[in-house]
Length: 512
Image 1 (cartoon, one colour):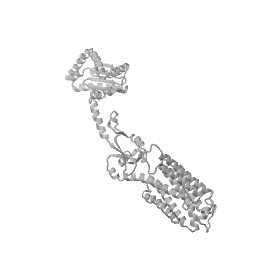
Image 2 (cartoon, rainbow, N blue to C red):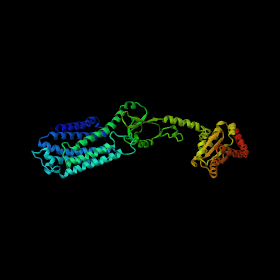
Image 3 (cartoon, helix red, strand yellow):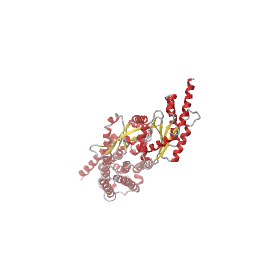
Image 4 (cartoon, helix red, strand yellow):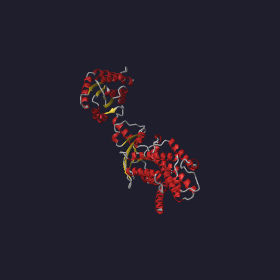
């Protein structure tokens, strides 16, 4: 029987030692510090169990057994804390301080038990044996200690079980739900039997905790740390990349940001452990994020923002059941800026600053689709050829630019107007949400902006307007507006004669 007992002790002591050795190299990492402390406490418990098995000296038997109680509390709280971290629950600092104070208090009570008998109702005696200690009645503080330890374990296990059964988990842990549940039931049941009914040579609670600690080490360290270890082995490759990147785990929580990403967006307070959704929320303050160029083609270019093209790939680590995401962020700001500049060149009339015919044709289908109440004002500026012939093309260009400025100023009052130069002296004002009254008001604004007592600064123009009929195309509207324009223009021959006289007078003055 003694050989079997030592064999069991040797096995569980060896098992309790593995996490201590393996985690020692990463104990400075906050993510594994609590797990290492738990492993260390369990190993200390193993040494105390071994000491109790061989001890014959009364003082060693008495105080090694008493010191086991605060160690057990430390183990219970460490397991609770690990479950809190693993299940993404935040433990308040004040709660940790209370637990630390209670642990210190337990050590004091254990070392002074012979005077107050709160743990065991037996003072120290030189004739004390293990058998006598086991038969002694427990004090009130022992039951308080036991109740608190049970509460910590039950709350921690309950949260762990709820977490493992969540339907939206994207992976399976090394130890599934049934094993966690069985270990909880068996461990608590054996401990109750040991405390109140049958005293085992080795405390079954100790065996249970060794098993649980090794399970936690396997679940958290083997699953989580090895995945990070594999990723960190590629750190040199990632650090050489010019592209910014983000790595997430299977829960879409950030594992790592590239250094150049953190440097580029240092003002955003990007934190490891936050969700990918939160990362996108933060990054969009300073950047435009897109997966395909078509997503931003119809958006207004923002020169104050960085343009990031996202390439998102799932990864899976060989021999592990975990998946994650590698997100590369390509800085395409210069490319988007060049595309914007090219688009401006293609879409704007370079001399007047209004949109050109090319812009109108590119957006014609979208305008027809999105705006059923379109309106058009087609305009022909009078006298452009005369200005060119009598005063030169520079004077004709100034006439066009002054008229274009008047059309652009419309947007201060009506932001749904689109001024377009069709070419030469022809302009069109597109009104997205129009009515006959609104078109008349716009024409009045144009007339007011072109009036001048100076004959050569006054701009005369002919126009024709058209309101869209149901499902009518823009080209048909243009034809209707054009017909009305030429009806008006045919009745304005007197203006041409008056303008010629004014231009002749100007040229004579210049010759003198």
